[in-house]
Amino acid sequence: MQTFRDDLLAGKVAFVAGGTSGINLGIAKRYAQLGAKVAVCGRNPEKAANAAREIGPDALGLSADVRDYAAIRGAMEQVVDRFGKMDIVVSGAAGNFLAPVLGMSANAFRTVVDIDLNGTFNVFRGCHDLLNLPGASLIAITAGQAINASALQAHACAAKAGINQLIRVLALEWGPHVRVNGISPGPIANTEGMARLAPDSATRQSHFDRIAMKRWGEIEEVAECAVFLSSPAAAYITGTILDCDGGSQIGDASRMDLSKGMA
Ligand code: HXC
Ligand code: NAP
Image (cartoon, rainbow, N blue to C red; front, side):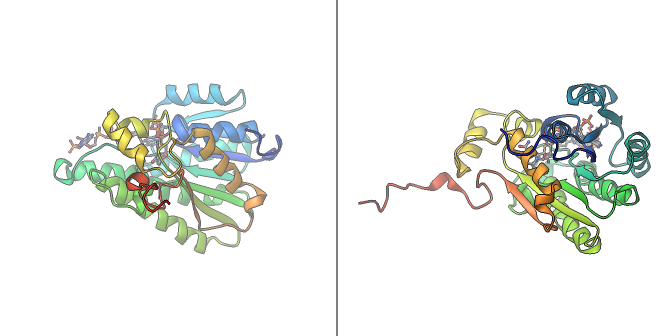
């Protein structure tokens, strides 16, 4: 896919929380391909080091838990020490498992809200004075569950809905100098999220049937959205949530029989 000039992000510094695997690692790799200096951060230091190696020789792999404000702030200070102030910050760390409310302890609910929602607060609150201003771009990775209630997903639905509102509030408060947006991926192939939320073929099929475009999304397609939102092409876009989901959010395409009503 050749969508952006190779040097689009030259001179920029990007930090991707949760960037050590999956969709967020795809975003980090694409930023680096387009010339940005990139740091990724997850809990597991070995995974972070491997991710940094995959991204390229200059990339930084850091270890911190987004639930721990001091730790994630410390990681971002390391980025600034190495590369200078940050231009792009992505908050994508998430935790998820399928469980009904009655199969989930208070700690289980709190854990997902803590990683996804409080983690995003910590990343964005903690980065503000480390940003190159004006012109910085923040992106939170949300999900369709923020809008559409989904059984077995009370924790993630609540957390991602909170993220959507946090995006909008920060876009209002930081409007003149920081753009704050979200990306809402649909079901993306070959990810931990899909493995957890669609663990068997029947569930995968029912997810698939709902997608208007009748195919899974690719990590690289979400990465292109992140590049767009961080680029000058999106200079007047803030507080928006960009669905990259093959039309999943529009409605459920699984019950359509288009032959009905045809001549
Ligand atoms: C019920 C469960 C459970 C399950 C864990 N818990 N799994 N409860 N059903 N399947 C409970 C535990 O029993 C515990 O409660 C509490 O959750 C915390 O569990 P820990 O293992 O101590 O937590 P921790 O080590 O912090 O790990 C967090 C985690 C783990 C979320 C549980 O799975 C993780 O690290 N996930 C990160 C990777 C990930 O999930 N990636 C997919 C993101 S995809 P008790 O009461 O026993 O102490 C995604 C999809 C997007 O987000 C689309 C939807 C929004
Ligand atoms: P993934 O591969 O599991 O990525 C999660 C990342 O977050 C990893 O780097 C993980 O590394 C890190 N992480 C988890 N908990 C953390 C914590 N407490 N502190 C710091 N880092 C933490 O997941 P994915 O499927 O690619 O999903 C990525 C994002 O896209 C998530 O925000 C998810 O909600 C969203 N999304 C995914 C899909 C999908 O189809 N997969 C759909 C909609 C939305 P460590 O484990 O080492 O910490």
